[in-house]
Every structure is written in C-alpha cells, then in structure tokens.
Length: 120
Image (cartoon, rainbow, N blue to C red; front, top):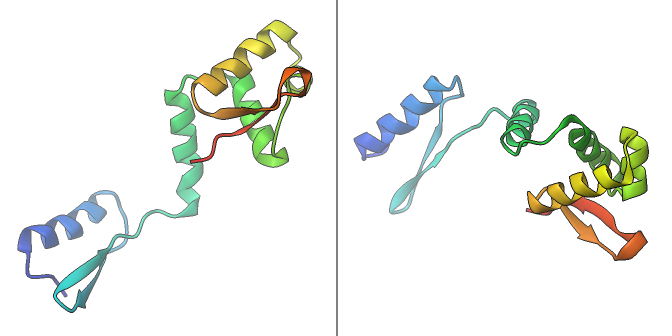
C-alpha cells in the first residue's frame, strides 16, 4: 500500500533497497499516513561505533579504555595506566583528550577522579 504522495512513496521504497534494508511499512491513519523504516539492527551497531571512533581519531589505548568503561562502568587514571602500561603523563593527556572529544565525562576531583561514558 502506497500513500497518496507519490514522491515520498518512491523515496521511502527506493532508499531501503539501495542500502539492502527491508521494505518500509506504510500505515493509513485518520487524516494521514505513517511510514516505518526498518534499519539494520543490533548487528550493525558495532560497525557504526567503530566508524565514530575512527572519525574522532582515537588511538588503540583509548579504544581499550572505552571498552573497559563499557564493561566496568568507569575508569580512573591508575586503571588506565595499568591497562595500557604507560606513564602518568600520557594517561593524563589521553584521558583529557577523551573528555574534550565528548567520549568521557569526569566525575570527582583530585586523585578521586573517575571517567565514565558521556550520556547522549
């Protein structure tokens, strides 16, 4: 079933085929219609996250820290040093970069600072 607006209908049916996605679902509503586009789902989320991190220019140590925070909830500088076998100076700089890029947010102060994934 296709809505009355032919251009919109063509767009909604052609675009998913281009990206190898399922057909959209059309539903008539009183006074209009609704189009539901179905995405690639959970299997594609990891690829999207990799692409985001690539664009942020995050190094391998920082990627390890992000994975650690996803699994553990937070990380502090001492854990970052132990995880990556690096100096305090490098750990400070790289954690600061992750905060500046909006990946981590800082909680606490002084030696009690912990880093967590930024919400949103």
